[in-house]
Image (cartoon, rainbow, N blue to C red; front, side):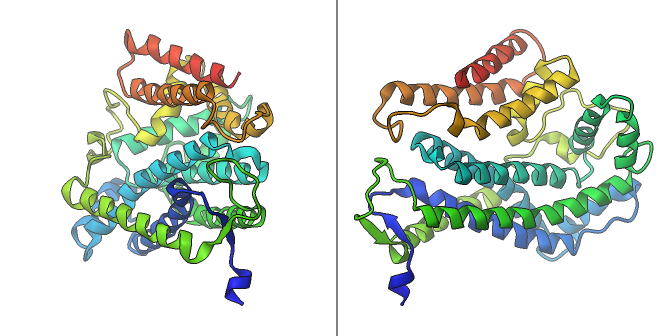
Length: 350
């Protein structure tokens, strides 16, 4: 009965296809760790909020390792998401529009959850991040500023907004699991793609134990990476301003968000107009959603087309330099190069 109902997979898929299940597992682990943090996360008053965030580090048994794992696992999951996204583009997996769109929705929700999470620590970067994001609402004519005050719950950022962000940070993962279930269910119904792009319904293997064994092997490798990161360099992904308590009267000399937000921050600061900057950020994500609708390729993947292969590698280089230049000061030549690479990013889709 098990063999009859076992999921079938192409025999030639490789380790690139294991990252999808790896993402699901680590998002679940992140959710469990976040639950233990939430039951020990308390808010007394806003003036003491920074010290409250340190309570888990200093006074809770093994609280320091829970916080470090939760913080670093966010960055490592983003790395897995980028690898998985690259694989889907390279091997033309976006041909199934529903699978592709649900996957992009998962990434968007995870970006929102990550932003909400790193605003709860009440540091210099988190505070100014809230200021930048919430002030986008001011572009709404007539009612923009009133809506901002309604979201803040006051005329400035305070304990009410932190409570709201904390609630959303805990609720939104439920929607991620819903979309992951939909994503995996569609994949198993339509069958997985393969490196050669062959539509061969004869040469299939059972998912269990063939691919499951490879999943566990990659999970162990990634756990080894996490353990080394936590105990040898736990603050590798941290910015120094994340260790400073919020100071209302001093703006950081150089606002640099988390590395997985630098791409959007780089686009935003390259445009002087706030409204156009927001439109470009939304459009940069929307372009990924419409990839299956832009053009129909005659080949099933980019592996055998060296020109498309080169273009895709060049696109990855563009993304890297946009993020790299976004972390630099707004001065010549970084500001000019940043605009050039942003133009190349949008021209790539055209």
